[in-house]
Length: 148
Image 1: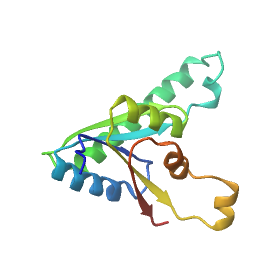
Image 2: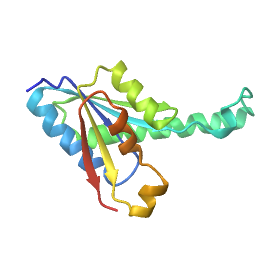
Image 3: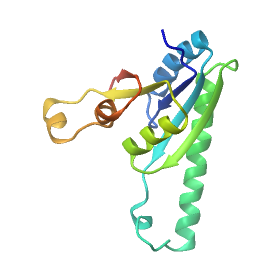
Image 4: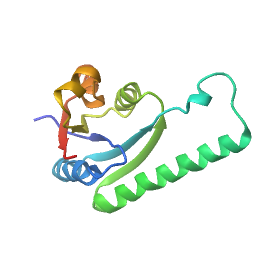
């Protein structure tokens, strides 16, 4: 079996973070892997163009990102044992592309994501992030079902 040196866990701020990190912890302990916990924040619509926006909005968004990064670090500290090398990453961008780019940059050997159970109609109208990742990823993926 291939060694897993770097495990990337893509998380959203929901109740399933503990489950995802539990799987990552078990694998990291077995293989001596480093765990990267990644959250992709969507770009704010006002900042997509050339105008940076008023300073107070930029300050507010910066504080929002700092708080999200603190939450990610808290997840790492609470759900992963101290023996595991771990790092929290918060990046901004389009979710699927950002996760795949970060996986490549970190030389990840495994990507762990949660997958929501949706109705047939929902799946027909809107494709999920985990399904898009599964289609486009060039590394092995572990998908964990998330209970609603």
